[in-house]
Length: 456
Ligand SMILES: [Zn+2]
Image 1 (tube, protein in one colour):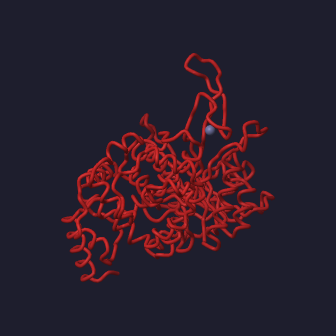
Image 2 (cartoon, rainbow, N blue to C red):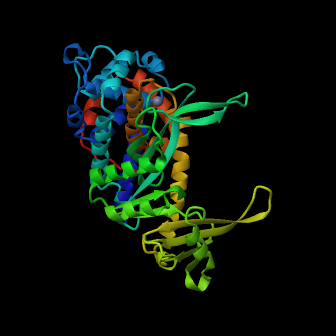
Image 3 (tube, rainbow, N blue to C red):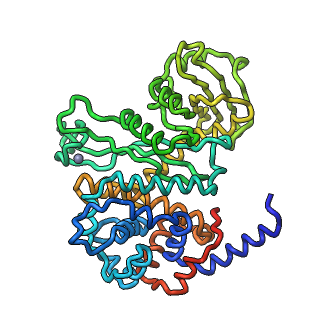
């Protein structure tokens, strides 16, 4: 419980912040606050460029790429046009720490750098950022059952081409506008998202789904990519208590086996088509054999569970099944029953059922919002900033890093909530602030001042 004084103090702070919305200055403050070691981390990136031709530091280029995303600037050309301001140079030099910066880098300069940079470097930078957030204790409340960090797997298609774009392209057959079967070339990505709170989800890992070379007998697929991604998460996050969540595609024993080996929990959407014996046996069980709780969740529905269904189905991996159902009215006005099912290796109890149901349903919501948001609302991740396969990946990773900073900024800045402005609006305001606001010495001392940062 917070004391009255604490509430008052927090409200006063909030009010102060409302009066002093500083846009881009606040973004810099957020970066400094949460990622104190950022300059060091960027310093550790191996510069791929020929050292004698360098005008810009890696910090200059990376921060410019991040700002392009945070300000929701769609194309490289637009970026060049929008960022061509004295104020932008001043702000970028404060961010990057390069006092000699006199001009904004050209968009080709950024692309050239991103073509040479190993995507591993940006992936590593993100890892350091995510680790420091986890260690910072600000998000411990988001853990499932007070213990497990929820990591959600989600794949999507990114870029589609009529002609082969690179040797790693995936391909499938599609009907074109004349009904003729044609080959389509494309790139897909698999994301691991970390849940840090309600509506607060960040990218923790990325695996590109792509063929190793042009003529592979069997193409790469989401499940294979998932195995690589999970192995990488284990390697990078070691003993972090994790609960993997994913859709029914993952409700397979090889994936459960990996989770067991890594000491992780899982929650997968259950589908009878994926685990048909399990589904049949569960359906055959009477209600008296299951744990039941009624009148729960926001729809006042019913939750049921059964632990250890693998024992009656002869499966080797632990499968505890649970469901949530409620009555609803369909679009045509007729009543309908809505039911969700999940499989987990967490032992289900009357006490944890509600939290487990919320976690299961949350995954779906996060997936729906996540990529749709990044594709259609803010970052336009389907826009091709460079055809070069390496730069393509680096642009994608920069977006994911920018999104981490943006999420922190949004959850910190009370203006956003007060004015009820959407994130799209926030990023346009940021762009305006970046282009128009001259960062003063007073701003700089505000940035450097050590203050408590509250997230809402
Ligand atoms: Zn390609």
